[in-house]
Length: 150
Image 1 (cartoon, rainbow, N blue to C red):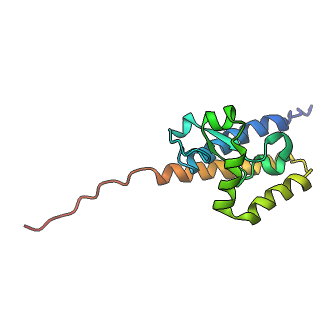
Image 2 (spheres, rainbow, N blue to C red):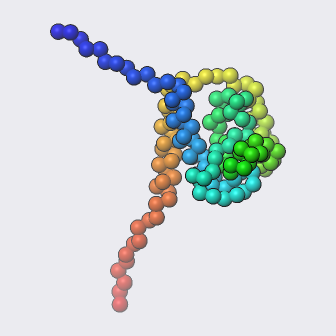
Image 3 (spheres, rainbow, N blue to C red):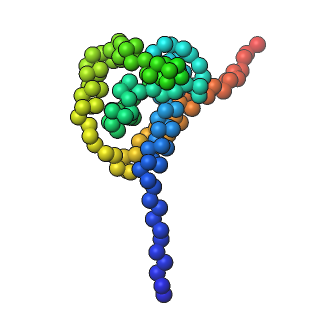
């Protein structure tokens, strides 16, 4: 009897990264309630972007998906103003403190790591769960009918 070999589907890291970014970006925009981190413009989260304080190009994977390095931004601030860095830096310090500001730059300078597919998959699972929690929190509770004694 001949054995049938099962093909193991290998998912490319780039595919996992795109899938994670889609979930992470939605999580960030919903977390920030569609309010631009730098100019405070408010729109539906689907009309906003997830903008990096320290850009993806120089921040490495350690900052690409770092929740304190990525915030909801409008198109104008994120694209036209190149991230609106000066205001972004000021807001990071206001909200998280100088320690976090410095830590982000430390991560930028130190983290030269690569993620394995397992790390991407665990983060995909994590952000799927976070988005599901947000969905549950936003469901209006059922109207409770109470018996009134007349």
